[in-house]
Image (cartoon, rainbow, N blue to C red; front, top):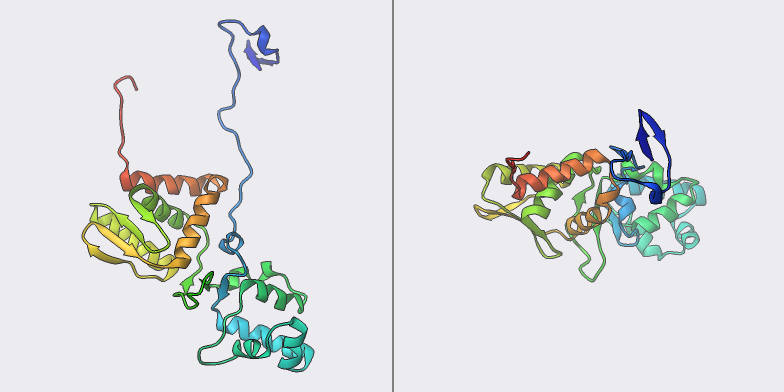
Length: 239
């Protein structure tokens, strides 16, 4: 497209000449949405910690089918395992995939429960009792914390560290992780904030994989974290 006297005119590229004014968009709007963190995780590895939600669900199933044993048979799961979900002390934790199966027998969809699932753990190996974490929404605060880690830290299954000389940034990072995930960050040195949690590691890596698909405000928050963590403004004499 060319601009001629304020009009938009389409022409073939082979007909372009020096001095032509090519029309280009200043902004290209793309469709983006904010996923629920549960949508990013493998449902068979997600353990739901919200005990009241689970107990309410299995009691409704018992009411429908008449007994726990019959319900377990219909769901095709081990009876003792199913009963453990209703224990007061040290209850069993159903996976997200099993929970989806349970609520399907109540003619309910997972979308209805996503905002009700507030605490999870991620069990994908023989380490069966990882520390549970709160499950936040994907927000500007979360993306800012990820930006800090991506700019001046590292994210691994064994350890997540933010390394920086700015004490204010360390306090901000600790506060956000506590508010978002209900996890405590430790300072083993003045320049390093550390936390070890496999579930948090999985979530952060999944967020990295969908970063480019998120709305602009979340990407901007991530960029702010990157800039604050290890960036600096640069002004050139030519502007």
